[in-house]
Image (cartoon, rainbow, N blue to C red; front, side, top):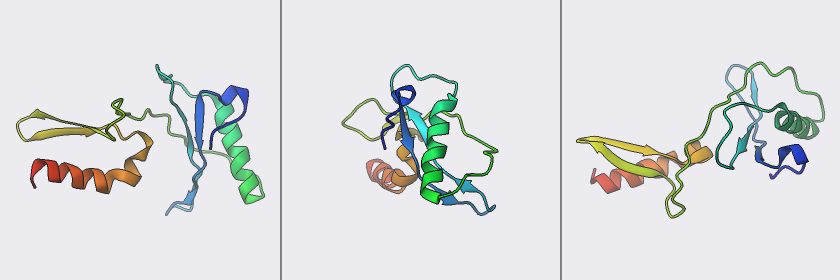
Length: 118
């Protein structure tokens, strides 16, 4: 979902939600795609995301206790999903699927194994 608020223009929302084994709720995150990426977090996108999720649930969310503020590695070659390179004998670097790593990792692993002849 692309945000519509003016404060959110450089951000994309990922309003996925799932229950965790510890009885928590993961509600998604926001991503900034314009280079250079900021290394800080802005509250406005998270406030908007909270409102979106609250509208789905029909009730207020509890206090957010933890937030990840990392940066995703994104392969800049648009013809590839990941950057894959041998960095040393027997050592391969495979990175850059952006926010698609959890979804694409089985296919990335299979393609990497095929490329290496495993």
